Each structure stands twice: as C-alpha cells, then as structure tokens.
Amino acid sequence: MTTYTPGGRRRHRKTKQGGTGVRRAVVLAMAVPVASAALAGTSAFAAGNDTATAAGHSAPDHAEGTPATGTTATVTDDQQMAANLDARVLDQRLGSDVSGVVLDADSDSTLWDHHASTALMPASNAKLATATAALTVLGPQHRFTTKVVYGDGTLKLVGGGDRTLTGDDLGELARTAVAGLKKAGLSSVKVAVDDSLFPEPTLAAGWNDGYYPDTVAPVRALVVDGHGVQDTSVDAGQAFAKLVAAQGVTVDGDVTRATARRTDVPVGHHTSAPLADVVKKMLKTSDNNIAETLLRMTALRAGRPATFEGGTEVVRHVLSRHYGVSLENFEIHDGSGLSRADRIPAATLAQLLELLTEDRYAHTLGSILEGLPVAGEAGSTLGPEWGRFDDPHSQCAVGKVQAKTGTLTGAIALSGLTRTESGEWRVFSFVENGATAAPSDTKDAMDGLAATVNGCWA
Image (cartoon, rainbow, N blue to C red; front, side, top):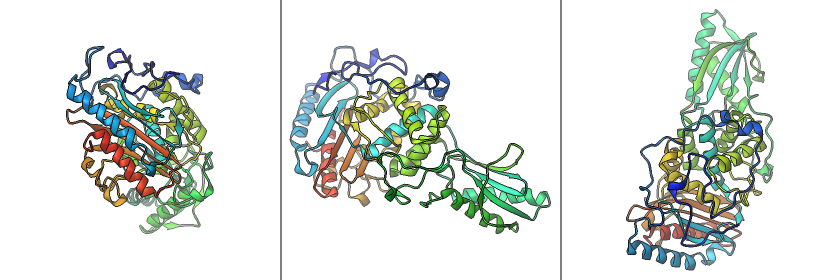
C-alpha cells in the first residue's frame, strides 16, 4: 500500500471516469468490498445521478502536471500550514493517538499527513458514510411515507421509516382518517401500529444497552416527534389514538400491533420532506436516530435486510464501488458512529468529503455540504452553545469552516472543508482516541487545527 505523502500528487480530476472511477489509486490501495450479485445490480443504485453537472463547489480543472493556481504565495502558505500542523498536532490536549490529513481538492495533492491511514474510532464522523450511501441509493428527493389504513374495525398506523414525523403530521393523519370513518357511519374503532418494515430492534456490535433510550432509541419504523422511548411505535400509536378520540370517535381498548393487509382500505398518508433535507437535519445536530433509520431504509432499497449488517454492507459497497473510496482499515457496525468497534482512517473521511467539492456529485451529495455545521453556527454541533471555535486561536475561523463533529468517551473527531483566501478548497480530517484532557480542551485544540488549515491562525 502506498501511503499519503505530504505535498504528494494524486490522480488528477481530469482522469477520473464517470461516477465509478477508482479515486486516488496511486495513494491508497483499494480493499475488496463486501458485495453480492444483487448489490452489484444497477437497479440498487438507480437513484444516483452523479454524472449530472450542477452549479458546483469546485474550482476549474488545471492542466495535468501543472500547479493548481500556481502562485508562490500559495505554495509558501501551504508549507507554513503544514509546519504549523506538525507542531500543533503534538498539543498534549490531543493525546498521543491522533491522526490527520489535509488535501488540496483543486490540485489533487496531499498537503499534510499525520498517521492518516491509521484506523481510529470515528464517533459521529461515521454519519458522513451513512449520508453518502443514503443519498446515492435512495436519491436526494426520496420521501418517506407514513400511512393509515382501515380493516376489520381497526385503524392501523403504518410506519415508513420517517424519523421526522411530527405531532402535527400525526394530527393531519387523524383528521383525514376520522373524516373517512364518519363518512362511512362509524363511531368507534380500534387502533394498532404496524412497524413491520424493520425487524425487532437489536444492539449493534460495540453498543451497550445503556445507550437506550436517550443516546439512541431502539430502531423502529415508526416514531413521532423524535421521542426517545423504548417503544417508539406504540408511543406514536397512543398519540394517534388520542387525536382520533379528540375528534369524536371512540377508541376501543389499548393500542396493539397488527400488520396491514392488502385488503385494508387506505384512509390517509403523510410524506416527509425530501431526503436531502433529512440529511441536513441529521448532520447539523448529529442525530443518531435519523442516522440509524437511514441506514435501514438504504439497505431496503438496495435489496438488503433492514439491519445493521444489511445497512453497513450497502455503505461499503457504495463507498468503494460507486465512488472509489478506500476501505483499507475501514470497519463500521452502525450508521451513527456510536459503536465503539467502528474504525475509520482520517484518510477515508477526507476522501468522502473531497467528493463534495466535485461538480459531478453536487446533485446527489450537495446536501451533505449544506448540512455540515459551520463554525459558530447556533443550533448546530459547532455552535457557541457547545463551546466550539471560541478559543483565541480558533475564533478567526468562525463562519469559515464547515465540519462534522464526533464525540464519544475516548474519541473526538472533526472532519470538514474550508476555503483559502484565494478560494481553494482544503479538505481535512482530524481524529483522536484516548486523550486524557477534558473533552472541551481537546475540542479547543482540534478547532485550532481547523483554523490552521483555513490559514487564519497562521
């Protein structure tokens, strides 16, 4: 395996082919992906439209073998950045088990590397892989549907994997259903929930039951208002039953589970916002529940079981076969990054983010770039309420850095993008495991590394 070399050149953009060309083949050897004949079929990935050119995010291509923008000042700035990173990555707040990489996305060169191929626990940076696979397999305009059907005296609320369903949405479903019942002359009904789209919830490898239900809820196909409870489906059904009863229809008995039948009559449905918007919400707030739901919906669309194993198999396939991202030292067991058994090198995270700078992927993956928290953005995981980018060294990067955060006990990550003063993309990933400093101090040090990449902390 050829490793990243600081300042080294990689395969230039102009030699990339379609949406499946092997990326940076000179730099990272490709691991053999876990894929079957069914996954390899084109139908599983028909939603992607990666060859379309959109108003994009990358700078124009440059001639093969010539510098990107070629100014001596830029080269000097990059050399200074690399020297600063060499010193600052040794900050004791980051501990000794830290990796990082900085890419010049416009010239396809690696500007800095510190153990970038070492596989470390990525925490929520794993959501970048989940989002990439979901958008590619399902398509950015995909919507999730929650239905209500009627049969044998029972209204059944059927979950469709919409993790953004709200109480207002449920109220509209109840109003539609009650109108139908009254029109049919019915004044009483039973209520049941159908969440059979997903199998019974299990723990992922590397999870413990202490995660339930606050850090993440058992993954089910039906939930309302993102409630963190053990049984989100029955919880949603109970809320629905109250809404039905409030409109003058008697609800008999407790909410139960029942599978919808083909003979049941559709009486209402709600569709979610487009997947692109769901992905943005997931990334801005690092929502674990959305991530795990998307992993299962992605698996189903690709013809795989709606399980951790089925979902992560599809993620691996999409990253390696569709985008040419290296799977060397790559290991994931969930969609959220909560698993302490997950391992992703900084080099792989940077490869994922570099896709966002390419025009040909803007249509499919653009919502990932839009969803990345911005340094200093209130309401995001890089907002002031989380104490991010408020250090004297990193404050200069407020509004200039977009990055995905990651935090677990013993693991902190920050991977994102920024532009130089001349408008060039710099892609970075920093991951540390095992630092003994207070997490807030480690995050301050990591924010400083991002400010160094931006160049504002020179």
